Each structure stands twice: as structure tokens, then as C-alpha cells.
Image 1 (tube, helix red, strand yellow):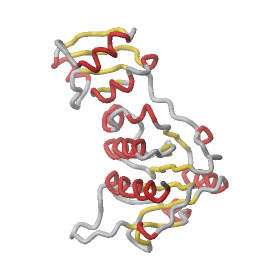
Image 2 (cartoon, one colour):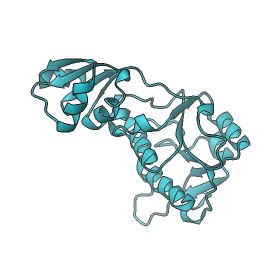
Image 3 (cartoon, helix red, strand yellow):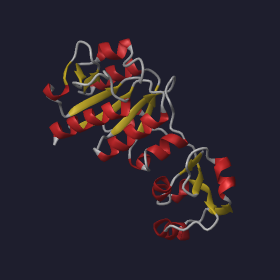
Image 4 (cartoon, helix red, strand yellow):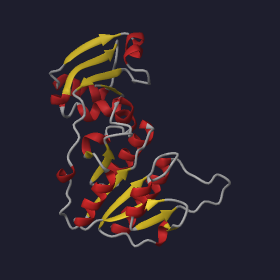
Length: 233
């Protein structure tokens, strides 16, 4: 898998066993990365900016890494038995920028893991890696076959499920968030799927006073994640 960007490179170069090859733009110079590159045993290939542009369609910042495909964890690799555990479940997101931003916010807020479905969901790719700014190296992402069944399993482990929707919901600030909680982030256009919504213990809404009646998925997720974080401190 091809990934790019300086923040991603900093994180990956601290775990160089995942790197197969490094492509650098001619005359590349970054003090922090240079020190990491000196200790990395992976092959370094120098290329022109035009050549790197052909490898990465987005801004690569002069460095591209060819790494092993991302390895998802299993549900039971997550700390389900801990007395306090905060998980974020993405219900069929389609935009890799949203997933990457949610992963970045989750890692910053100390979320214990991200759950995504195997089908009809954006996967961890180069765009997700770059948008997450390297956070993927510090948080587990789990792929599951069936979200509804996964939620039922999480409930057996003592988790409460909090979804987000504007209809038939309560102000997100009025919820008493438990120590073991799963925050569901719905699809950008359709929101949560029916079975997932019916599985939620709470449905939260973020009040809005403007004419626009919805927020970007990653923005809404960020507000909710930090509200859970604030309540569980």
C-alpha cells in the first residue's frame, strides 16, 4: 500500500518493519525525518516531483512510503473486559477523509478502538492514513462482518450504545455517558442503518441554530467524542 505525507512518515518510520520502500523527492530535507531515515534500513529511491505526483494523486509533501497493507484487529483484541472502555463504531462511512479525521480525533481523545464493517464502508487506504496524520499507528481499527450482531455482543460485555440522529433524540449534553460506551457515527447521507439505530440505548442530537440542519460526519463525531471524554474524566 502506498501512503504519503510527513506526519504519517514520522509515525511509520518509528516502526520501520512495516516499510518496504521509501520514495523521496530530489533534495528532500526535513530535520526530524532525516534522523529517522538515517536509521531505517528500507531502500530509499530518489525521484522528481513529477514522478512522485504520478505515484500519489494528493499532496505527498515529498515523501511516499510503500508499506504492508493495514492489518485490522479482531473485536476481541479490543479491551472489552476493562471497566472503562470507549469505542467508536462507524456505520458505513463513504468518505475516506471523514474516517481519517475521526480516527485522528479518536486517538487524541483516548478512544480505545474503532469498529468498521467489512462491506460498504471505506477501508483504511492512503487517504485515510494521511488524513489521520499518523494516528492509525496508535489506535486499533477492527473490521466486523455484521454491525448489529457486533453491537449485541458488545452489550453482553456491558457496553451502552449511543447513536446520533436529529429525530426522536435528546440533547447530547443531557446524556450521562457510562464508563463502557460505544459511540455510533452514521453514514454521511443516510445516517445510521435501521437495525443499528434500533440497537442504540440512547439517540443523541447536536442542537443547531443555523439554517443548515446537519454537520459533516467527522465534525459531529468530534463534538460527540469530546463530550464523552469530558463526562468520563
